[in-house]
Length: 509
Image (tube, rainbow, N blue to C red; front, top):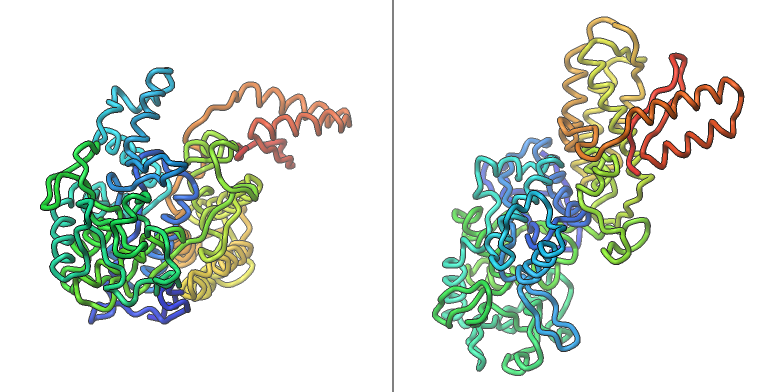
């Protein structure tokens, strides 16, 4: 099995080799969502690229055990203009309270208590899992029967406390004058290797969200928080260092090692996240995990997805270009098209999400799906000999070369182009249908909904406008015909003229 992958740790493409002595089993941990709000398409680009990597490894012949966390504690806001950092669950509680008062609380939130952080986490975890399953995220589907594959940090507090104690015993961490526990970055010579930073360059807290007063008690400005005593904090637990809460970085070290690394000294094969996780989050994970385990590595390969912009601009709620899965489905996009649009740009390139691109992707998915149906019904004929089966090798080679998804899609599309859909054309070789479905499964679109699952259209009005346009065309009133076509496009409807009349389909608006 040959698989090449870019490793952020070594800053180069390497031949992938798992820890498993048999060379088959792969342990894979992904940083998942922080469940204080609905996940947006930028979040899902990272999660879906991790799933694409998993599917590519499985296509190559590996057996992947994948774990993805859902952060429900410890992730603090950035301090700003003198305002102290706070747990994001508290932010979510205020937002839900305002929505409850204004009558804009989502219907599926029920009678949620905005003052209960555990209820808030449960609500947003359910929402994330629903969205992830609609998009075919394999680990989310598996978690329906194996919840341990999508762990939550609040259920691993004892293990985090144990890790902090181990780090203190090994003199990799210390209790500062303010009672908080910090990791001593100077105790770990490789700190900065993943991100390319050096300790001398670092003059800010490495993701600890620590204000100036607390900075003064640290041995070095880059030392990061492991445990924060705070009896007033919303989510808090007893510990040897006082009642409080864990630093954000602890959770992944504990859960990855506990669920995937018990037989390997805490070492795992793969770790993924967005590029914003490289520093400080993943850098700190490596330092604390390796310091505790004594192993030279935490994850052997690090996989990071670059940022997503929307129509060329940074995604922001204030500018109206902040999109969730529900937003896009309400605009007429299908889960299959959304997934493919978020993953078809190479993971190491910045991606620009556009609605025109989404419409193009929807047409591509529709084309593949029509052929899938036609092959199953024996209503497709090819110009060559088994073009899909022949393309499968090129498809595999592309995906196993650092996830060359463009090359894989190109191989698939060229093979699909070798077919015409016709009346019953005789028996189609089973290996052609198998090859098509193998490629669609690897891209994650096999079995996903092609049609939008939410939002409504006035079909009576659409049929009326289509008839009016047909009459205008008969009268050679091209201006009216074009105007009606444009009106339908604004409604999220595309029309197609053919020998049997005009048909229409829903598209993303």
